[in-house]
Image (cartoon, rainbow, N blue to C red; front, side, top):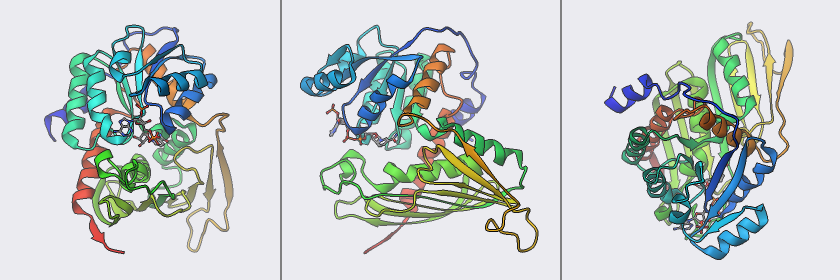
Length: 354
Ligand SMILES: NC(=O)c1ccc[n+]([C@@H]2O[C@H](COP(=O)([O-])OP(=O)(O)OC[C@H]3O[C@@H](n4cnc5c(N)ncnc54)[C@H](OP(=O)(O)O)[C@@H]3O)[C@@H](O)[C@H]2O)c1
């Protein structure tokens, strides 16, 4: 085990230092699609307020501020980062901007929630984690899946081993995205590709439920621009479970997760990465038993009224109020492990031509 990983396992940054009830004042960097969705959820949260937005373009920032009723709009990220009355920034920028702008934010003394994928290179992830530690600032990768109550409940069922071990799993996330060669999905300069954009969901969800991947084989198709448009991973996890994970930015798939245990099957229907519901079909595990002839079916339900970002906003705001420097739901050690796994997959996948 290397030094940083050991430090992350033994660190005390999850222990609570202070608490309070003040509303956390958020700043948003970027005015794109996801920034809009994120901003619209503040109306569903009691513990946080949206105080400012910044864009590379002042007009865009102003019109975003107008739509979301944000008091301050800035025409550069830097300006917002230098405001004293901002408690945390959300970075909803293209993938290639995550590392430089997160670094800039931490250097300016701001806690950060940065969208997935955290960075495009493991060394960048390592550097940012060390920087956050040095500055004693909260830092989290915005893998919002971890903040959904249904995901937490499924994790509890699996960890309890009530229905035996998970032996097999399958998860997928395929959609037809904007295939403009210059757009963020297809342009390698902006960190495009299926694994970074959506493959990260089956990958990290499978590791969350089944443990780290110990062995894998991966295949990918490449676009003319040089990004992966489809990726297929077959893996073994440290629990012994096998998984089949696939993702695509040019093909629509079911976007579901199945976890097959010895005596039950958990099904998380689309959208499995932000689930309002899942089912657990108990079949008992005898010879010939099947989820199609269940002994009992349980529904795991936690509906939400908005688009789901309320859970992440509430969770991070609570972490800040409690004085935490990282999230217990999405620890930095897992961000680092994910960065390393993505790099391993990208350097070992078999490129297949179509
Ligand atoms: N959690 C989720 O469910 C989810 C869903 C979709 C996407 N995401 C993540 O969110 C991030 C943004 O995705 P999006 O769909 O919102 O993308 P988008 O609509 O293209 O917006 C990206 C924003 O990045 C900023 N930007 C900075 N440098 C840029 C550059 N060189 N070229 C283009 N834009 C640049 C722009 O903000 P300004 O021009 O305003 O400065 C732009 O509005 C990605 O990291 C993605 O992985 C997360």
